[in-house]
Length: 392
Image (tube, rainbow, N blue to C red; front, side, top):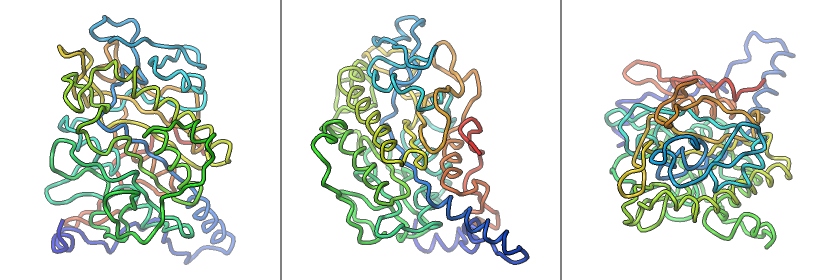
């Protein structure tokens, strides 16, 4: 969006009233309590792990072992440490840790079934409207709470997503907030968010081995390093484009991005299982997990029936997410899909509710004013946090 469009379409006078509340009329004790509450909220962190390409719900967090083979697919379901809860077979380490996280099995959106809409909804809580692109939650948090010491407040690893299929906004930038609140990245685009050094080294060979010496392991280890250093929001793009590599985008055509679903078992799944399990253990051992919300999801799910090429196609009608840390309960399943994993049948959760939950954890009221558009107040998100994940 151009600078002229910024000023003509969006007034920032009332940007984020939350956090800049007046103390007028409050007693000294009330002032102290409010200030302490704001400090406490500002210490929270979030790591959002984007399973770029749109991971299949059936081959990850919502297997259907009793469904017909054309729905069930070639992967088996495995039991977990939580009775009655199953994961797909690539995730034995996560299965052992099922008591440490929640699964959402009823995520959905009703926008166009393209990668870009899902990325927008998960990371901004909204769809772009004409020339108006909404800022990523990380940029909003950067604007509200600022940096801690010399750590960049918002980082996208390793770079912003690109080449997803449609040349449109993908939900990871500061947009009308300005370049000052843009994410820092480790490679690729140079950010105007400050001269932060975010290539952190010095980890032992043992911890590198635990995460795995592969892309997923390196990225999640770096996410932990950034949070430990003081970064508030980290978005991890497990893939930053969908070309010339195997991704979660399993159409089955065998060209570049589009492998068959058994690739989840043979390559993607084991690396993800090892890296995410180690991240949860690592954050816990360092005393960071209670303050760090970890969310892992794709931008949509996959079709409930295997296609003729042995893959699955885009399906925004239902998919799954894993949520851990940040004081959220573990060992629970929120919502449910039908017998074919084709639609929610219990507790539908719109993608924007996940964004609202992230905002809530980071100390921002989703109902706060983001901006005024055409004299209309725009909230951070037109959704409420997921009540099953909110404590206190």
